[in-house]
Amino acid sequence: MKKVLIVGDSFASDWTVKYDSGGWPNMLSALYKIKNAAQAGCSQYKILQQLRKEKLDKYHYIIVSHTSPYRLPVKKHPIHSKDSLHKNSDLIYSDILEHSKTNDRLLGIVDYMENYMDVDYLTYVHDLISMEIEKLVKPYKVLNLEHIKNNATSCHTKIDLTKIQEEHNGLINHYSQYGNNLVLREVINALEKL
Image (cartoon, rainbow, N blue to C red):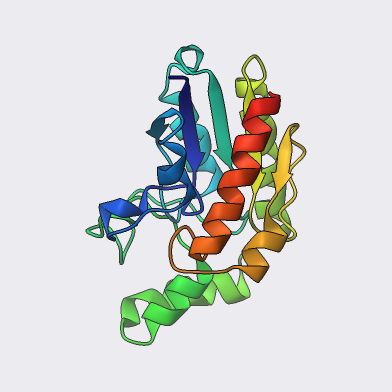
């Protein structure tokens, strides 16, 4: 059985650590031996770190599920550090804003994100990290996945899944069951062509 490394954020992580069912990454394990290093809520920087921790030449394929440029890396999440799925999450504006309604400690972060955060800088750093990821995985058979609209990376062998995500949004890996099946089919077809 061929070995596949999956890195990325919640669109690719193993949701069975918290929920009864898993999405397309879990279904892919019926065809491949999977090592899933993806972490829900993580930034592009942490995706790079996921790759750096692995011995990449032991895998037949590498799947990189890219994330939003607007996630701020943190060592310890102020809300989710004990959550089995999101314990390695980075700061996401919508998440922090929602929790700030019941947690005054988060108001400073909301203020920073709304009034001081430099979005152009975050996009620039995201692009630099994406180029570093591409350089790191260049010698290997790599499949890059985009799930978030307006989050284009320059990576080669890319599948744009934004339309599936918009039309089949759901509870596991942010897809409905049908959406997970569509993503699985796209991933399998792309891996077979690598």
